[in-house]
Amino acid sequence: MNKDQKVAQAYAFAKERYAAIGVDTEKAMEDLQKVKISIHCWQGDDIHGFLFPDAALTGGIGVSGDYPGMARTPDELSSDLSKCLSLIPGQHKVQLHAIYAVTEKKKDLDELEPEDFKYWVDWAKAEGVGLDMNGTFFSHPKLKNGFTLASPDKNIRDFWIEHGKRSRKIAAYFGKELKQQSVNNFWIPDGYKDNPIDKQSPRQRLTHSLDQIIKEPIDETYTIEAFEGKLFGTGVESYTVGSHEFYSNYALTRDKLWTIDAGHFHPTEDVSDKFSAFLLFGKGLMLHVSRPVRWDSDHVVILDDALIRIMRSLVRDNELKKTNIGLDFFDATINRIAAWVIGVRASQKAILQAMLSPIDRLKKAENEGDFTTRLALTEELKSYPFGAVWDYFCMKNNVPVGGDWLKDIRQYEKDVLFKRNG
Image (cartoon, rainbow, N blue to C red):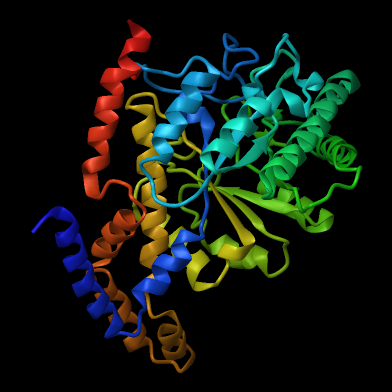
């Protein structure tokens, strides 16, 4: 019996086990096939980009490690992303930052045009993936005294407002060309290291700046905007202008998406508990999946309890249709492509595990006050053979099963990555 036959045999057993508790594994795989994960390009080059590749990282951003093979050019980064996509099941998206523009001549952030991303659109068409957008409000000389859109200096604000407007046009270009909606995410690092006297004025300026950026109506068939808050950042520990409360309120009042980054909250908070509270009132979510070992440490996403709770909440409350899922971490202590693959596959496993659950039966027991059944069944599910369903899903998608994908990575290291440092 060959490996494919063994995978199919294990799946047949798992399918029978799940069917006995009312779970349709075929339906679960069909639903998982529709879920797109937005892969963050900046893991591949340690957030250097191509506009200012030698610029120091600022805005509280830092990358640890110096594993060989970092992408240095558009062709190297797109090649690495293509390798990643070949090792994960399904059709997905890629998140870009503005600094990944591929321009014929040197441009600043307030000068970018949609055609400066034609390289990426052509690549995305060839790969069959969508593109999401992020304005780059860090690692730039006009991040002045820790401020961008909330700066007291009008010239600084105007520069970043123009950049924000241009990011909208670029995201709309992605949507039109690739025929799928592009999420345009806004995150800024503005704040104070020590206690401020005036907490109101920076938020008034930020509100005005954001309103200027989104003033022109835009067709949401092509792009939709999301706004990302943060508890605090390195260098702005005492006050963050764009807090969670600020952006959730801004998203609600402007009919936009709220971005929840799993690493941007207090370590004891359960991020998954926030989804249903916001989505009762809000338009939708952009989710940045990260692993905050010590708050916003951006470790590679793994199948841990936090990730399981996140995906379980989205599935059980039927919120996937209102949630865009993207990854956001950077780790240069390991193979950068492997980090992508581990993170995406872990996210998909968590979604599948959540889907392989008799949700209606559990909700019925809960509504009837039968908490014994609820607890007993959820505990039994933890040892059900979801891994066999995952392996079969990978086989159906013609990607490596189990840890076989690592062999491809090692060969790619030998043939491509290690030669970059030669």
